[in-house]
Length: 178
Image 1: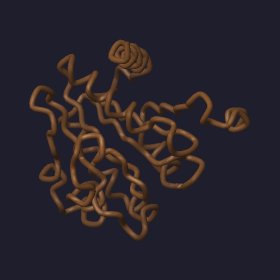
Image 2: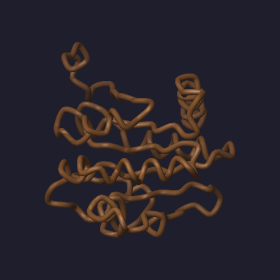
Image 3: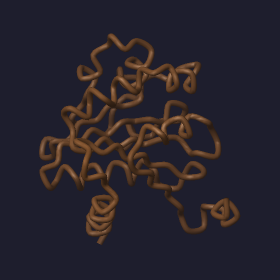
Protein backbone atom coordinates (compact mmCIF):
# COMPACT_ATOMS: atom_id res chain seq x y z
CA UNK A 1 0.00 0.00 0.00
CA UNK A 2 2.80 2.41 0.88
CA UNK A 3 4.73 1.69 -2.32
CA UNK A 4 1.58 2.26 -4.34
CA UNK A 5 1.07 5.59 -2.57
CA UNK A 6 4.50 6.77 -3.68
CA UNK A 7 3.88 5.56 -7.24
CA UNK A 8 0.68 7.62 -7.17
CA UNK A 9 2.68 10.64 -5.96
CA UNK A 10 5.15 10.03 -8.79
CA UNK A 11 2.30 10.01 -11.32
CA UNK A 12 0.92 13.24 -9.93
CA UNK A 13 4.35 14.88 -10.11
CA UNK A 14 4.70 13.77 -13.74
CA UNK A 15 1.47 15.62 -14.47
CA UNK A 16 2.99 18.85 -13.09
CA UNK A 17 6.27 18.54 -14.99
CA UNK A 18 7.36 21.04 -17.58
CA UNK A 19 7.57 19.31 -20.93
CA UNK A 20 10.14 21.75 -22.27
CA UNK A 21 12.87 21.15 -19.70
CA UNK A 22 15.55 18.46 -19.68
CA UNK A 23 15.36 18.02 -15.95
CA UNK A 24 12.83 18.90 -13.32
CA UNK A 25 13.85 20.19 -9.91
CA UNK A 26 11.36 19.11 -7.26
CA UNK A 27 11.49 20.86 -3.88
CA UNK A 28 9.88 19.10 -0.94
CA UNK A 29 9.01 21.11 2.16
CA UNK A 30 6.45 21.49 4.92
CA UNK A 31 5.61 23.97 7.64
CA UNK A 32 7.47 22.37 10.55
CA UNK A 33 9.69 19.37 11.24
CA UNK A 34 8.15 15.93 11.56
CA UNK A 35 5.70 16.16 8.66
CA UNK A 36 7.49 13.64 6.43
CA UNK A 37 9.70 15.68 4.09
CA UNK A 38 12.64 13.28 4.10
CA UNK A 39 10.52 10.13 3.96
CA UNK A 40 8.60 11.49 0.98
CA UNK A 41 11.68 12.85 -0.80
CA UNK A 42 13.51 9.53 -0.52
CA UNK A 43 10.56 7.42 -1.58
CA UNK A 44 9.69 9.70 -4.47
CA UNK A 45 13.30 9.46 -5.63
CA UNK A 46 13.20 5.66 -5.31
CA UNK A 47 9.92 5.55 -7.25
CA UNK A 48 11.37 7.54 -10.14
CA UNK A 49 14.57 5.50 -10.20
CA UNK A 50 12.58 2.25 -10.17
CA UNK A 51 11.10 3.16 -13.56
CA UNK A 52 14.48 3.89 -15.10
CA UNK A 53 14.74 7.62 -14.46
CA UNK A 54 18.10 9.10 -13.51
CA UNK A 55 17.52 10.78 -10.15
CA UNK A 56 19.61 12.95 -7.84
CA UNK A 57 18.31 13.37 -4.30
CA UNK A 58 19.86 16.35 -2.51
CA UNK A 59 19.85 16.78 1.26
CA UNK A 60 18.93 20.45 1.25
CA UNK A 61 18.20 20.86 4.95
CA UNK A 62 21.49 22.37 6.10
CA UNK A 63 20.35 22.98 9.68
CA UNK A 64 18.77 19.68 10.74
CA UNK A 65 19.55 17.06 8.08
CA UNK A 66 17.75 13.73 8.38
CA UNK A 67 18.42 11.96 5.09
CA UNK A 68 21.60 10.28 6.35
CA UNK A 69 19.54 8.44 9.00
CA UNK A 70 17.30 6.82 6.38
CA UNK A 71 20.24 5.42 4.43
CA UNK A 72 22.55 4.69 7.35
CA UNK A 73 25.36 7.14 6.58
CA UNK A 74 27.44 9.49 8.70
CA UNK A 75 25.93 12.97 8.42
CA UNK A 76 29.36 14.60 8.22
CA UNK A 77 30.44 13.01 4.94
CA UNK A 78 31.23 15.62 2.28
CA UNK A 79 28.12 16.81 0.53
CA UNK A 80 26.14 19.84 -0.59
CA UNK A 81 27.75 22.19 1.94
CA UNK A 82 31.21 21.49 0.49
CA UNK A 83 30.00 22.49 -2.98
CA UNK A 84 28.27 25.60 -1.68
CA UNK A 85 31.39 26.73 0.16
CA UNK A 86 33.60 26.22 -2.91
CA UNK A 87 32.07 25.81 -6.38
CA UNK A 88 35.36 24.38 -7.62
CA UNK A 89 34.67 21.31 -5.46
CA UNK A 90 33.46 18.53 -7.74
CA UNK A 91 30.05 17.75 -6.22
CA UNK A 92 29.90 14.51 -8.21
CA UNK A 93 32.70 13.07 -6.05
CA UNK A 94 30.40 13.41 -3.03
CA UNK A 95 27.57 11.37 -4.57
CA UNK A 96 26.68 8.20 -2.72
CA UNK A 97 24.71 5.21 -4.01
CA UNK A 98 23.32 3.43 -0.95
CA UNK A 99 21.22 0.87 -2.83
CA UNK A 100 22.79 -1.78 -5.04
CA UNK A 101 19.42 -2.52 -6.62
CA UNK A 102 18.48 1.13 -7.31
CA UNK A 103 20.42 3.55 -9.52
CA UNK A 104 19.70 6.46 -7.18
CA UNK A 105 22.35 9.13 -6.58
CA UNK A 106 22.26 10.98 -3.27
CA UNK A 107 24.12 14.13 -2.26
CA UNK A 108 23.84 14.45 1.50
CA UNK A 109 23.92 17.90 3.07
CA UNK A 110 27.33 17.37 4.66
CA UNK A 111 28.70 19.01 7.82
CA UNK A 112 26.52 21.64 9.50
CA UNK A 113 27.62 25.12 8.36
CA UNK A 114 27.53 28.24 10.53
CA UNK A 115 25.75 30.23 7.79
CA UNK A 116 23.25 28.07 5.82
CA UNK A 117 21.24 30.93 4.32
CA UNK A 118 24.37 32.70 3.04
CA UNK A 119 25.57 29.46 1.44
CA UNK A 120 22.25 28.87 -0.31
CA UNK A 121 22.24 32.42 -1.63
CA UNK A 122 25.87 32.68 -2.78
CA UNK A 123 25.08 31.40 -6.30
CA UNK A 124 26.91 28.09 -6.08
CA UNK A 125 23.73 26.04 -5.82
CA UNK A 126 22.67 27.49 -9.18
CA UNK A 127 25.90 26.21 -10.72
CA UNK A 128 25.41 22.78 -9.16
CA UNK A 129 21.78 22.50 -10.32
CA UNK A 130 22.58 23.58 -13.87
CA UNK A 131 25.35 21.00 -14.01
CA UNK A 132 23.12 18.28 -12.53
CA UNK A 133 20.35 19.01 -15.05
CA UNK A 134 22.69 17.80 -17.79
CA UNK A 135 22.75 14.31 -16.26
CA UNK A 136 19.54 13.75 -14.31
CA UNK A 137 15.90 13.43 -15.29
CA UNK A 138 14.81 14.54 -11.82
CA UNK A 139 16.53 16.45 -9.03
CA UNK A 140 14.70 16.19 -5.73
CA UNK A 141 15.62 18.51 -2.88
CA UNK A 142 14.72 17.52 0.68
CA UNK A 143 14.56 20.96 2.29
CA UNK A 144 14.10 22.53 5.69
CA UNK A 145 10.66 23.47 7.03
CA UNK A 146 9.54 26.68 5.37
CA UNK A 147 8.11 28.38 8.46
CA UNK A 148 11.07 27.79 10.75
CA UNK A 149 13.93 29.04 8.53
CA UNK A 150 14.39 31.26 5.48
CA UNK A 151 16.59 28.76 3.61
CA UNK A 152 13.74 27.01 1.82
CA UNK A 153 12.24 30.26 0.53
CA UNK A 154 15.52 30.88 -1.29
CA UNK A 155 15.23 27.45 -2.97
CA UNK A 156 11.68 27.88 -4.24
CA UNK A 157 12.61 29.96 -7.30
CA UNK A 158 15.27 27.38 -8.21
CA UNK A 159 12.69 24.60 -8.45
CA UNK A 160 10.13 23.64 -11.07
CA UNK A 161 7.75 21.85 -8.72
CA UNK A 162 7.05 22.54 -5.05
CA UNK A 163 5.57 19.78 -2.91
CA UNK A 164 4.26 21.13 0.38
CA UNK A 165 3.54 18.32 2.82
CA UNK A 166 1.00 18.30 5.57
CA UNK A 167 0.50 15.60 8.17
CA UNK A 168 -2.68 14.76 10.01
CA UNK A 169 -2.53 15.68 13.71
CA UNK A 170 0.84 17.43 13.21
CA UNK A 171 0.32 20.32 10.77
CA UNK A 172 -1.48 23.25 12.36
CA UNK A 173 -4.70 23.87 10.44
CA UNK A 174 -4.26 27.66 10.76
CA UNK A 175 -1.01 27.45 8.75
CA UNK A 176 -2.89 26.15 5.72
CA UNK A 177 -4.90 29.37 5.45
CA UNK A 178 -1.69 31.32 4.71
